[in-house]
Amino acid sequence: MFMRTTTYTYDPAQEAALLQLNDEHLIPLLRQLPGFVSYTYGLDAATCRGVSLTVWQNREAAEGFRTALGGLVQKFQEVGLIIAPSQVYEVARQVG
Image 1: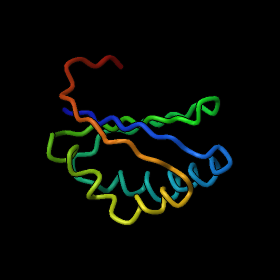
Image 2: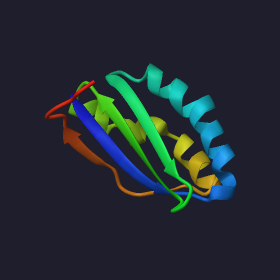
Image 3: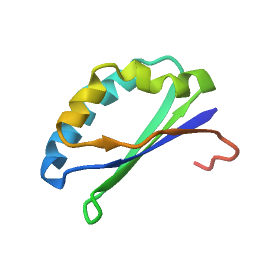
Image 4: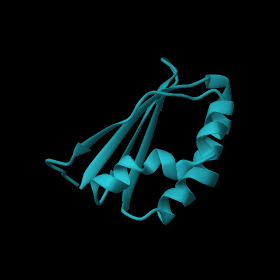
């Protein structure tokens, strides 16, 4: 398995719109993508930063995630999300 981490900065005034995009568009898309395993998303209102962690069955799925998002990236940017480059790692250990 592989995990993909992405950090963000965001406009706290747009937090509700950001979470709505996640709930209504991103999460349904994730559930349809081949190789998708899980998604975790966190925000820190004090620093206006966020992080997401997705887990994938293989490296190709993890690395192809941004492309699979298509126009959704622009929608996130329109609500003030600034996305840093993602990193992909092979999962070495996992505790549930």
